[in-house]
Length: 316
Ligand SMILES: N[C@@H](CCC(=O)N[C@@H](CS)C(=O)NCC(=O)O)C(=O)O
Image (cartoon, rainbow, N blue to C red; front, side, top):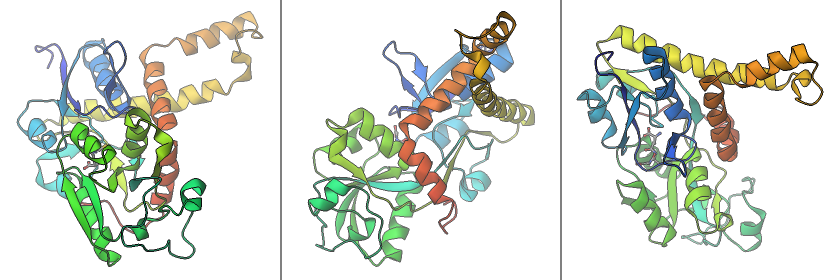
């Protein structure tokens, strides 16, 4: 690694804002990117010594196994199957997610079924117009989903458990899945709720035309992974991940210190405050984490709801 001079980091190919996506200057941003930058800072003393490889869900594990990338940092769910049969180790969790469903607000129940009694109302407008308000109304729906994901398996389980059928439209590339969904080829798009929130905000012509249904059908603890066989590398990536999490929580604590308001702080305090707000990459990391959280407000809420669902993390 030292000889190579950079970390090769596998990130999301389709650019999921908040996790990994290039900004308007083409600079990669997001919590998955921050992990790679933290590792580069730990190894080389320079957070910019990273090269990114965009990976689809199907490409990601092979890319890590074959050595094409040193770290997989790509909204990947930690499951028992992946952890025990693919020759890799998950390092920790950087985002607790859960799977959900997005539908056009104007979608009518494919089977004409009303929302079950007592189901939570997602969207008052959709409800008033007779639109779908619960995943339990999706019997017979056409559902867009990406292959090689936990999403695909959870989807079948959920419909089977609720005695409903669906027609899958399985498309590998995010761009093409979204085109299929936004052009009406599918009634529903399903993925991690963070992905729904992010794609709705960044790709829908009018985000308000789409609703995320209240059901959270799985637990998706997302985090980075490395190959088996190099314990020292595993330790470096693990503690870099912990450092980004710690950096975020300590910057939140600092943000709550009232004396840190620039206009009112006495000189000694403002020196401390400015030191704490210009301490380099730990802040940039925590900002991205906060951005991810801001863009995925629904997801964070849902993720905590997900914690109370009964199904465990899924294998894929
Ligand atoms: N967390 C799930 C799903 C991850 C996933 O691939 N999500 C999609 C939907 S947001 C995605 O990131 N697509 C981007 C791409 O394939 O480029 C998993 O690990 O299987």
